[in-house]
Length: 233
Image (tube, rainbow, N blue to C red; front, side, top):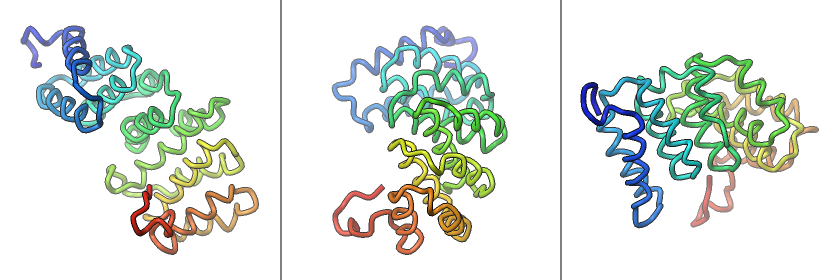
């Protein structure tokens, strides 16, 4: 998929990826990611906007599998990810309506773009004020790439805690779980700040958040009781 090739037509490329995706024998994460990796190699030298437009066309297919491939194609094309602006982020966030779609959007695209100052704090804060639970969750999960070493973060306590403080009293389950995640990720970078935040807001924080973040701070695990054979996120 290089300039000048017959496949350098974004609609043709999108249809090819979609057809290959739908022909998979099973929609496991492993099989879908293997397909995405194949196309990432083919797209490695493609212009960033070609990759972005291709991903948006895949998003229009309205399946979780297409969304996953769309987000990962951009995330793993450094120039495409670096080209994203606020308009792009809004387009890629269109239709987020589940735990999985929000977390992919925030971890792969919105959070990294925010970390690199490609989108403004104001955009993330507008999600905080949304009546839509998924956008409030997206605001919190977007802090994860600020602090997660595995996702390229080097730590950003002020921006993380500003979002967390705005949603400290939110009792929607999806938001509560995201708040715990955001603070647990921060605790790896700045445990003192996370601990102080708990102390200052303990009367407002959900018991889940207090328990999980304190566990993380003291044991390194969200749920220490699951250390032996249990699932821990």
